[in-house]
Length: 434
Image (cartoon, rainbow, N blue to C red; front, side):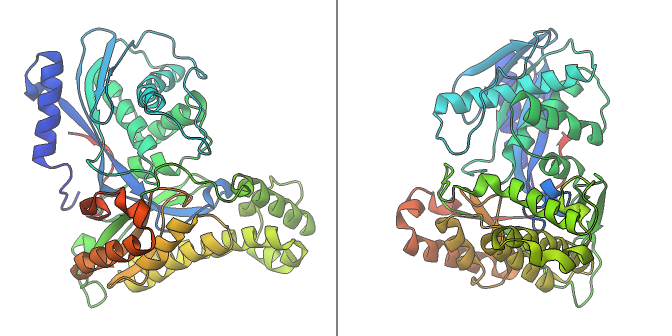
């Protein structure tokens, strides 16, 4: 497991106390799911094309304290939202009853509360759809990391995974991480209607402290790649410790400044179709992962400039992932970081994602002292940027980013607690029950 500091004993005790108050039972009976947030250092925007991606968790995330209800009743309260969610595990949960998420529209607090409740219902939907017998509900309290805007950190997958592990524990079900990846996909794709892949839940369920998770999104194969620094192996390459920075933009609602962003997947598929036809493989599914790199080099001139940029991002990002995994495995954080920054730049220039505040934040971070590399997390329309930094420089880098971003985006910066504008994190572990 390694040297883990999350969750702290005080966080665990707070959750235990709250659940004990809800159910009138001893706090020692309370189990807690720790479901971490994830970051994707390399592999931006290529998972939907069957590319190779990397991911790891951080020492922040979702905590869900629970006890079996000893009947079919589910009662859940949240540390972030008012009210209480109540339903029964024997109620039929139908997809389509949950509110659909549209990132281009703002939604009210009441809809957001409805969303967090629906992840629990979605977990029941997924478990029952796969034939699991459920007769035990839970009494639980769920809470995210205090003061942290989790946009871009896959908090939705962390919540879904937390509910799955809790219901499985209460009902004495033995479910493998691979099965739970599929169950969480059912929650998000079918029950909630979200159009996302399996990267997030895979990272949350498969990660191990000190490792980078390598995922082939075409074959679904994964591998854990150890960093020598975090395994206790020391040499001149790995003497420097690192920290992970989360730098927040203040954007909590999506700013769709580029109306073409939602067509990126279609553009990638169209580029793949043209390249496959040109290389005599038009019978294959139009995914860029089905295009051989040699065929891309030979026929890329047939793509219009727009499609050419999308394809260039895919093929260059795939190369960066493979080089990055090599750098990580040897403890070469300097090269690993340069590749992360190059990924961020390609996301902006070739994939054309991001918005002005996040791009400005990215540009500030890569200039900060001791930063190995940075990119924005997620699509870059809200949330945060991530960075790997020399541990000895983490405080200086944090101060620099805070000061410089406040100069160019004073209004957005004013909406963030100064103590939480840049968080200094460590690598995390997989989701687990404590």
